[in-house]
Image (cartoon, rainbow, N blue to C red; front, top):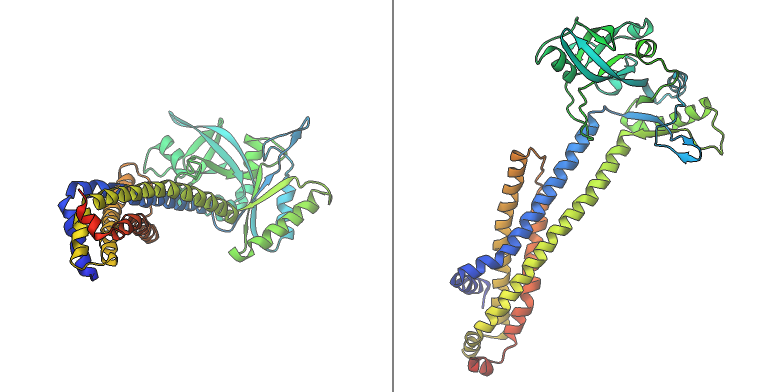
Length: 406
């Protein structure tokens, strides 16, 4: 029996029991569609988080204070208040691989403009901060180093602050707002960056000169963290080493002392997110593969029933010259055909479900050829694996006993 005649025989047998064939393929359909949908959601979420991280800027290096210890109890990371503005100067002076660096202090702020008010957060930074974090302005411009040197009461506001104080699509540059009752002149409005990977609104902020915020809003003698950028992507590792050496020397950290700071790069965060996403996708795909295996067991069960029902037919075919190999091929083709039909239907259902989720729930999904090929190939293997035993059982029947079967 050649492949074409085997296919015709299998097609007629499956078409003869349409409802049973349809129900048998459901397990494969659900399994394949689940694999495609799960991987599309996982890949979409991963890409969305990475894009969100990239909005932080390019070649970004963040320096956080380490965790402090009180009464022998270790506090949260960043609870130490060990940074001074001098450390920023040391980084600028002693780290040739660092292009720019800026201190960051921040505080909650009540802003008022006319009869409108908005609760937000104000950040005191150098003017270089806009380049480090890759901030662009939609209206006006960023404040200048001169503003920071003179402690000018100017600020750049985010899109959310602008919309809530002045209304959407209004240019507020030149207007004055009161931040914690202190008047600040708006010199620019930042372009929207959307939400962060933690779900925070990156447009709900005000940026003002570091010296102004330090003197008028937040009179503290330390800084919360340092943002820096490497001269190029290839120089990030070198810049991190130089920053660690500069801070170790500046803060007089002994060789046996624990460093009172942590240095993190954008690449580390992306790698951490990628690693977490990979684990999540493997977990989701594993759950979906279980559905495929259950579908394969359904195929084997139905094929065993089919072999039992068609025992006399098998005996008759063997009596007129069919070999055990022909019978094996016939039933194996039927099992594989069920898997392939289920796989194709599962691909259509999985792609449709992913696109529907994306449209209705606004969920980021990415359908990759890899997920389609993987799920379809696995479904085909399921058909061969679970169809082999029933086909082998049918091919092992003895013709005379098969013809006597009632």
